[in-house]
Image 1: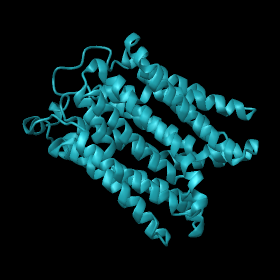
Image 2: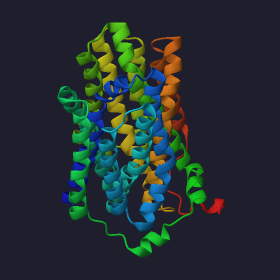
Image 3: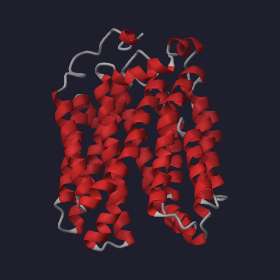
Length: 395
């Protein structure tokens, strides 16, 4: 893949995540206009993540069978169409249905994009390329809510229309400029059945990476779902101060992925980088638990953003080194575990928040610290990758 294609793929990721972030400030107002309860609002978030968890492995396998580029185009189209449909939502059930349909249609976008990068770069440069994708993802999420807040006064439907337009505008650029060089022979060699692909979740070496992916998603979604409540009730934070916490977290992650990840990959092994990122995230959560001022919370958010930037792209790069299934399939499974974590996290955080306001962050600290200990002491990726097929014993 040329640098031009990589940067274009990053730009497409940025556009799609900006479209996703634009909707976030408007979604609560849409829910309020429909007189939705807090549980129903939570189901809009959980329903999206659960629909992705169920559907994304199929899209990943389809990407290996028909090509990553077609699945990427389908995902962009589904993403855009779902936003336009939100304009017509007039009840809770129609809103939930549109969210679920949008999640199903668009869930192949991320694994297809990551698989394109994984197929196009060697082991030495793959991690750096995936970090750039992560930076584009984070930058889009950083800009989206700001744009959405500016658009909301223009009308409730304005953010949804802009999000749909951004997603659809990316399609012709992806169709014209994204390169995919895999042949039909390559696709047939990496074509596996559903059960075989699911068994890859439990294959030696890689199962621990999937476990960390799930745990990180639980911790991150706990932060996103409860931090606003915590800031308002504990520090009487204004909407600007609450939004700043999320922007600081995303901004720290983008800075690390753009500015220093290339240097870190040259100096350290991937497993050490991922483990250190988990440790930094754990410290960030415990800082929030013991925070006595709003700026202390901001410092904790910075640590969480830095730790996530170190761990997430590194885990994806480690998974991309496997040779038993196609990159689309394995990236689909990675996204599925991430979606499952984002489904479980808000529910667990809600229960923990009832027990104590700092409960979700204490839970996330314990989770990240245990994952750090387990991942650091494991034998996975401490030796050369296995030459045998890790799925062979399941066949």
